[in-house]
Length: 483
Image (tube, rainbow, N blue to C red; front, side, top):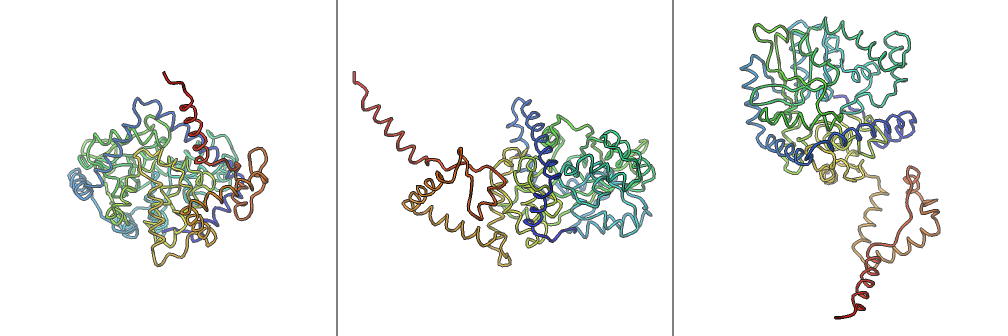
């Protein structure tokens, strides 16, 4: 697996110093969030739809073994081959073996986070096989030699000027910054790859146990070409993506595009079942479905963390997360970023490599508010923090000073008189060090935090305001004339 070893805090510092990255992140966060909100606001009852999504995923995960067996049976009945992979290494070996035995020289891939998870490209290239990412964003980061920065938009961290420079350098074309021209260049480069590819590889947005069908959503058409043009098709899918029926699929189709891109429906919604049937003009001659575990059954067995398997990979939690929108996806060090990445990554890779991620959150709750299947992401983040802290091999995650400050805060909170005394002292200090309702100076180490945001002056606490208000109300009642 391709996992970088630098700590999250170190990568985050580098991201905060990158002015171009900061501009790009601010722009995409606002755009995605606005589109998502407008799409859900147009629904008559968006909360009921989210509840339906939550219920169907809850039921599917509860019945996962049965649904997977049914899916395997239906795929085989349709003429496909099903492979089971316990680990990412097994999944890589399965796909590489298919390619080797079938004499594959060129592979075209649709956008797939799970193939990023298992580092499939590197494994195929090590066998001398040419691999081409065909999603525009994935194509860009493949040329740049980078992992995805976002679940939905792999190259959202790059500006069109940066992409123009990359194309000119890697493809040897004249520099052209117009998005339409950049898209044309990529299309011309990839067209020949589609025509000559021996094998197509995709992920899956969902798989329907009832029919053995695979759902793929996209806006470019490249995945559909990867599915229909090569003679061999391999779909790699995490086992949690299975759902029960086509009726359930209708709910996914209503939720996922709205959450991901703010669309009622993606431009291309492909549902296929097995390889090409006799008499059909397009489609693969062979279809292979690789069902990947890679730690998912371990998550399934844990009642506290099981709901993290409900994720549709829409990316909406990233778009509203104040941490992601400041540091971007690469700071998280692996495939999955943002709140869902901070939860999934320590469960799918050795926890010591991701020990900081659950702590990289403000717990503001914005992620839970936009999740299409109502995953309680803040609660899961707290659970992950607790589990990591209880691990005897856990070596910190949170630096010493914040840990001591947190313990001191907890100690004061359990002593009301001391808390009220400290609050009064802090308000007096606040009056001397604030200007126009904002702190003009904060002591270290809090000062570093204050540099990135406006910190309001301390106000009179609610308990004191409530006492005063209650006295006024009761005094008013007492003074009312009786009839």
